[in-house]
Image (cartoon, rainbow, N blue to C red; front, side, top):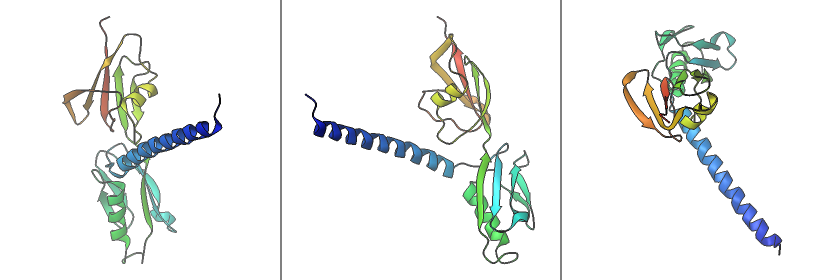
Length: 184
């Protein structure tokens, strides 16, 4: 027989479990975004409140620096958006603005790459919280010949370092995923 009280209790526990799962996933993606270091190929947005001539988007090239008005060349590669914000804030404060309101964010992330036995191999924009499983989905999924248990990962910075990953492992910018072909 249907018990409405028991049904509400089960439903509320399911909602609580789902909420906790969503919060933990969101927190991981947020933490990953806060620790993200800028590299060549990223596009950053620099906004200074009330100062349109100091606010713009810029693609980071291989030099790793940005030519910023009044401050000149600022090296940004290897820094987090928060560290870039602090550099710009410190440079503008006092000499140009009394208390600048600076915001730096990633407008476009650099790519990760996926090759081998996926339907659409190629480069895709990175997003915080990206896992191997989600990367494979972006590439259209596995082909019929894919060795689903044999996924290898390397990074553009060191192509000699390759290791096996699972679907739940995280992908970083400049990572290269290789989905190998199965023998059967």
